[in-house]
Image (cartoon, rainbow, N blue to C red; front, side):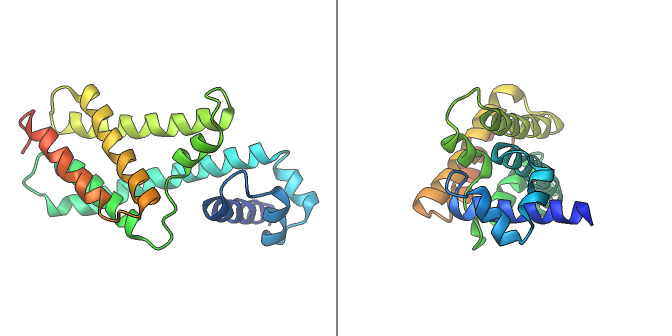
Length: 192
């Protein structure tokens, strides 16, 4: 029962942070919407920052699992392409951006609201982004693409750019555009 209340608090906080932002979502709002008592809430989370960190950890785990699953599924569309999983990654990104619930990236939003690079929330968001870059580098290595470290940075920039552009100006085709840009980039290093 106790873990259920903690999960309820995390789910509620995630939804409210997505809808209102981190700073605009008060701890009282999370408590009220979740229906969990303040005593129980503070049993699990001693501060709002602690709650945000736990929400972001949960989001990182879910996103990583979701991306793996979607890349595996979408890569079936590219059976003869050595860079099929990289293409599939952008197809997954496009699927996410097309959702009505799309509110941008929790980690980009966290960095925008917690601008000090030494703040624990900013640091955790940075770790997520570096993890994504590492994921891309692994896909590049798996496809035997040279210059994987440099290319992983460039492709991560295309991904985050697509997310930001879709969120800020409503460009729902941002991931498809970024995918086309990635293909041109990869073709320059002979990945068809």
